[in-house]
Length: 449
Image 1 (tube, rainbow, N blue to C red):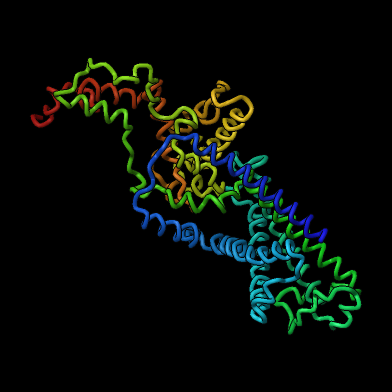
Image 2 (cartoon, rainbow, N blue to C red; image 1 turned 180 degrees about the vertical axis):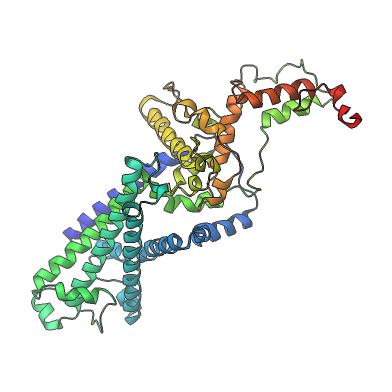
């Protein structure tokens, strides 16, 4: 009874703290401008099923994709066993699902144990790739400090959690195979489930287990508590980690851009301005509509995270920091300052900072900083070729190029800042109606030469 009460308190506290942090992240994402991504729902469901659930884009790099599939499937399916642990913890039962599934239950546990081993293999190889092979994209300059340690912490946590699961099953297996009269004499009759056979993997650990029933019970209970408390801590670590993508990958792929990657959107304010220019009935001197006299004109492009739309902000929280975007970026490969991964990390870091400012000082607080210049330099933005190789490479359909373009728009349309070559083009378009430095009357002179 006491253990059930303690378990319920830990479970409720873990879920409450997690839900509170998720609420903060949701608030931060909704600081962005509105954008309608509610169209073509059938296509969106298919995209989410193919990319997020099917891991389709991970196959571009087969070895890493297969290892990631081990970890992904293991994480999803082993949570079914976590559900049983939670119910056992609440009701004080032992392997509750066995009473429903019978012998089929042991087949499922065997399957989970194989998955646990595959997860251990996967995270071990991932660690070797990072720390021994030292694949360059994991050692870029933006992957220092927390970014580097976060990836390693997750590998260690998954390794320990899977190990605890196998140790728990090994001790439990010995207990369940003990004659009923001995279990009853030791006050452990709940372990008398009539195990027929051995678990697929943990049977190889039973040789390490003591023969004393009390010691076995302590090991089984210790691993059980370690496993479930570890999962609660892992759950609350996720929102602070790049591994939050295991949750956000689903909505992020659902709301992904379905139009061609290179298709640019038109700014609504500019579109209206142009339409008014071509409307002969429009009055350029007309007074603004009633109630809009004091409205502050919307900023062109983006200077800070609030100028981006909510999908771009969700992208930043979904970024896995895998670096596939940067590893295919032609600007980065030729030594330029641009790294699409850093663009996403900077956007998330700035958004977190803005959110913390709101929590501490209110919604109107201005810390005098902005995403542009304080986090992302113009040199990074102008190095982008807008080839969209980064968006194509992303395994969860993140679009770094759209953020780069919006920041560029601010530089050009609000600050008149841009490379001298582009400024000359803009001037020619404004004066000559074409990007060349010839008057409109001379544009056909070439045909006489």
